[in-house]
Length: 195
Image (cartoon, rainbow, N blue to C red; front, side, top):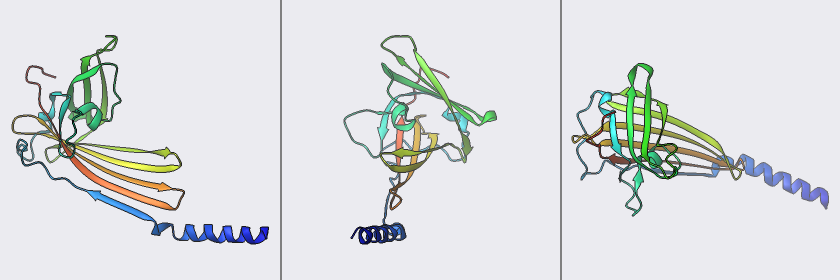
């Protein structure tokens, strides 16, 4: 009886492995640029026009929730700091293909009034592109995310971001899923500050 149970278990596992490509879930979501937002600026523009100081709170084409959409959180995935980020400064360094991101705001303890980080970036047809890749295991599921953040400015100099995400997940070596989508963000430029 024990031998039969082992053989049956082996056959079931072999069948699941051979059928693993059949258990694929796929979802794609694409949102267009909102008609009621400011027009996108002229194509093939200079990517240095992205350089500037922007409000941290903006709009999303996909989310109409009552909570704020933030440039540091929604776009750059930064965890909340003690206090609140008020503005985000962007500076594209074309010679080194880097974008410097500076977060400024009031902190509760005033020990770190700002923080900064840099990302690899390149100018493609007037859009400043940042590509990120994140992978790892969570609760036995392996996920790999590819993120593309494309930035330009609108006619009124607001920051336009087209955020594209592609996530591939695999659980137990059998169940595969993928999700792709994009969302647009708009963040007003702060007129009184310069980078």
